[in-house]
Every structure is written in C-alpha cells, then in structure tokens.
Image (cartoon, rainbow, N blue to C red; front, side, top):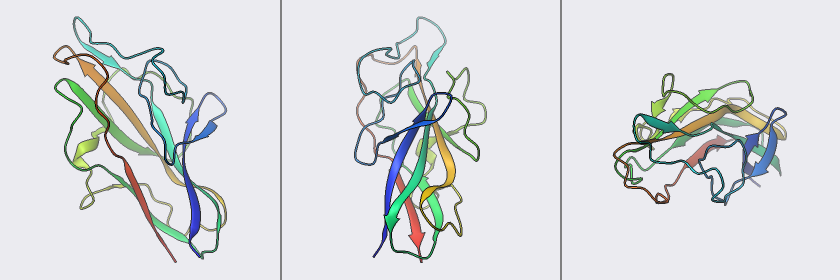
Length: 163
C-alpha cells in the first residue's frame, strides 16, 4: 500500500496547516488559507503588487511504505496567468511566518520548473508520518501591464518516489 499524503498550506506564526491536496490556493495580500475575494492583489498604478508568501509542504498521514525520496514540485511550463502576472517559487528548509514579499529576489519563475526540470524539495530517506522535505514557498506578482480581474487557474504538481 502506498503512503497517504496531503499537501498542506501553512499560515501564521505557529504554522497552522490547511489541507490543500485537492483544493485551491489564493494568492492575496493577507496571510491566510481562505479562498475568498478579501484582500485581493491589485493592478498598481506604478511598480508591482506582491502577494504574501504561500508555504506548502508534503504531509504523510498514513499508509504502508518504507521511505519517501525525491520530492519535487513543477508546473506545466506555460504561464497562463496573463500579461503582467508572475508566479515565483523557492525551497526553504525551516518554516517562518509568511510575509508580504517586496521583491522576487531569491525566487525563480515557477514556470521554469517542469517535469523534466523540477524544483527539488529534498525529503530523501523520509520515514513515518508527518511533514516531509522542504517547504515550497511561492509568491505572485501583479504589474502595471496586468489586465485586471481574477486570473485563470494554474496546476501545481508535487511528486515523490516511494520505496
């Protein structure tokens, strides 16, 4: 039997987790996991609007397996969010309270991570239940050339190997 896993979003000073395995992640100007229209990102008159960070992680809740290795995150390789909207990612070992980003420094364009060249989230040799690997930290940007409105959805894939 395979491992039973969740993808969790972590928010707040204590890292409160919300299961996002089959759900949506809303990038906005607030540190919460609620998918609503409160605290939306807006098209700025000048510069860039940055979202709060989204901290995601693989969480094993059960199943029968020996170990989890090779945790990876990737996109389909095409930014379908529209002109002036960007999505960025990085791997971080230790959780800290999500903050509103002020630049993309230290992040990489998420759409450069594909199944052939994914973002490595570690986790090699992970056993038992609980959170595994590094955190996937993501931010969204909205620039002055954005067309406005709610952007289309994109798919995030997180994969791993089991032994």
